[in-house]
Length: 74
Image 1 (tube, rainbow, N blue to C red):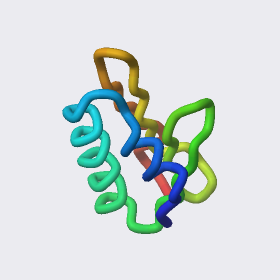
Image 2 (cartoon, rainbow, N blue to C red):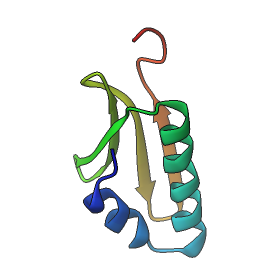
Image 3 (tube, rainbow, N blue to C red):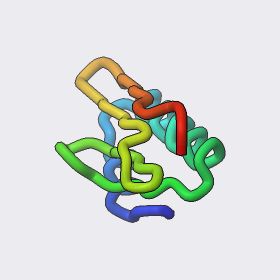
């Protein structure tokens, strides 16, 4: 499920490369987990599967970190 707040957050990241990378990561999450929910939490995009955290995009000034959580199971 798309979230306009997440889309706006990614579109407003500093450098063009950060915007492009974050968009690619977001698209990958949606392709991998079709029913994923997304929201801004703790000032960064979080992705949830069945109410559990599945991934997070964590930007900083010069980097983008991507974390996968609860990778196994439903």
